Image (tube, rainbow, N blue to C red; front, side, top):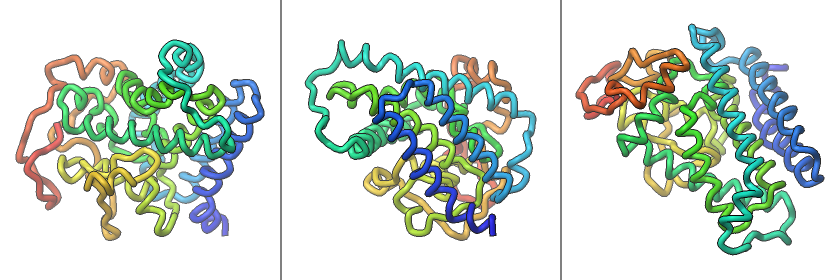
Amino acid sequence: MYRTLIRYGYVPFMLLGVNGAAIALAASGAPKLWLIGLLSAAIGCSFAAERALPYEQEWNSPAGDGGRDVAHAGVNELLLLVSVGIIPLLAASVTVADLWPHSWPFVLQVLAAILIADLGITLTHYASHKIGVLWRFHAVHHSIKRFYGFNGLMKHPLHQTLEMSAGVAPLILIGLPLDVASALAVTVAVQLLLQHSNADYRVGALKYVLALNEGHRFHHLKWAGIGDVNFGLFTLIWDHLLGTFSYDPTRRFTSDQLGMAAKPNYPTRYLAQLAEPFRATGACHTSDTSTDGDPLSTARA
């Protein structure tokens, strides 16, 4: 019974329950420390769901990457929280025109912020697979060999900053309020947990619209071209428009299909991953390497 509850209730709980609590707290003007408590609860729920109903059992066990992933998560969550703190300063200095719909119900303001941020983050993510200098930093995220919640926060901090800036900058320019930014920060963290979750949950036809784990696993296939799909953070709307949406219900994922085909020995330690984009070995190159019967013309490097 509990497995069925997790399979069909986990996503609504996170999207409506946790995000709903974030929106309610932000709307009430609660102290910003609530962000930490709510994010901690979301992470706890994520780990519990993955252990109770895993898609791949072995992905729940650290493979020498546990400490590294915690370091990535800690640094990038801190960046997320700091970004919320400096938004009032940015808004005071760079807002072009206060076009923000302050009269809208608060929940609609947050939804509007999510959709606008989703576009900026999606386009930056797409560009990071096309432009070599951006791929150097984004490659850290694609070096994963197991797919679980913390992977969403396993990013080079410079790339994390770039993505979030692309998502939030348009909002600041039109007068993003601090309370909306606080709720948005929580929804981003929750989405990353859901998107990379090892929980074998189901969302039905919504998998074609929402950027959740069933679709995002295809993005982490290790072959370029094949893995250059499903770039959205919150939704897959922009992927449908860009022609980058992909889904195959018959595909079963294992660790052998994740990572980067042309860089199977990408550094695994935290500090080494921070340094890798600045090394010659962090450059991109092409290869006609193919494995597991997946046709491709360029292997991810």
